[in-house]
Length: 175
Image 1 (tube, rainbow, N blue to C red):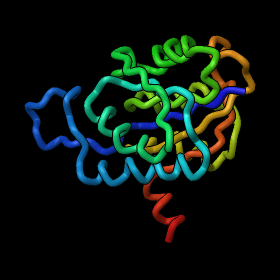
Image 2 (cartoon, rainbow, N blue to C red):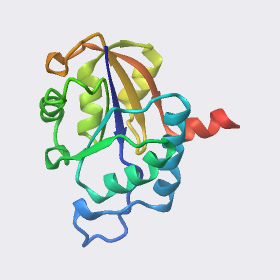
Image 3 (cartoon, rainbow, N blue to C red):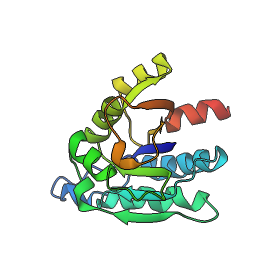
Image 4 (cartoon, helix red, strand yellow):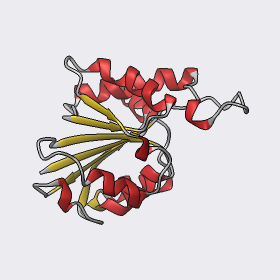
């Protein structure tokens, strides 16, 4: 079995219109949401063997706030090919994942992540799948399981959505 976790970067700052998109930083809300998702992942044993991440500043900052939740952080590979690309390109990168990585965390951007989730998910709770298709918000986390023994065999509709969580749903659950 293989598990893919898709994490959209936390909320980024649009207040400086002259800043290059690649260089945008997180907002205060983003800096609060990212560690919340990291804590959720650690509490639910959602530790990746490997992290593939976009090179954008907001992705790096998100990971800097998510990964301290784990006693031993996973290996991270930053890849320019993950910056603002469509689902097909993301799928090709995923197929290159080493065989020893059973649990993979991909951290990136919309619309590519949402499109990738839609492409890969074939089964799972219908209401949860619908929520994901309607909106994949910043710091949203989708966990998808595949009955595969090799990432090279990844193909459309092969996955089962295990869960889809957002910082605000974690807040409500804690109340």
